[in-house]
Image (cartoon, rainbow, N blue to C red; front, top):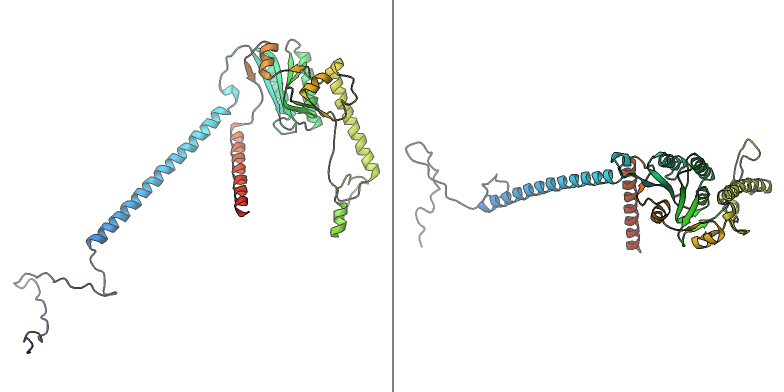
Length: 349
């Protein structure tokens, strides 16, 4: 079979346009191999790029929208905290005659929420208010500093003498033990629940001794002092009988101050029971029998039935708004971290 004569002829060069003939469109051929240069995008490629660009735009818009929502949520949260925990004098209160309430909540310590400065400031404001019919000191405290407790106790007695027409009652919640009861003893009367914890009329000082443990480990204690007893009750040194006896004398003296304050405040209402000042705690029901408590009642009951003014106004000094928000947010973060650690621990078990 003979080849066609044109099959061996070399391909003709395309004639340039503009010399009397129109340029002919190139016949589409197979795509060039890799590295041959860019090619024109096909319809499916353009559609894919369009979809990717649109999806990216939608995602950016969604992110901006959720960012705005998140910022608005934080703002609303802060505003709510500001309203709920703002000082009472921000919002005028024209309630008229009322029962004033001051809280002693938590450990009684210098700089704490139940410090003498805070409680005394609240009591003074309550007594100086012309519309105060009576004052309730609402106590829920395990005790704390004997000095801070004594400051509050002494100021309560002074205010009672200065305002004899305004009664002052202590109402015990879950507990008024040790320094908490020291404070309560200065009130005209003490009310509690049958299950409240009262008493613990005593003083303590505790610590640890690591002498034997250090001997076993082979650690040598090097304590340098100027003053023979400056290392008093050092936990890494053996106890000295002379120093222990001195500390016991100091504790007995402070205990005597406590007993004197309770006897002066409660008077002949106290039962003749040798256990009263041994540091034991009692239920509210036992407290009534021993004369540590006058009667059962809550703050609302005392305000309504004893003072005669059911409307209660809180005079407890509060921390600044920003401080309270920071403390609450810090507590929330601490709780979240603790929960996360506990959850991680449970997963590792």
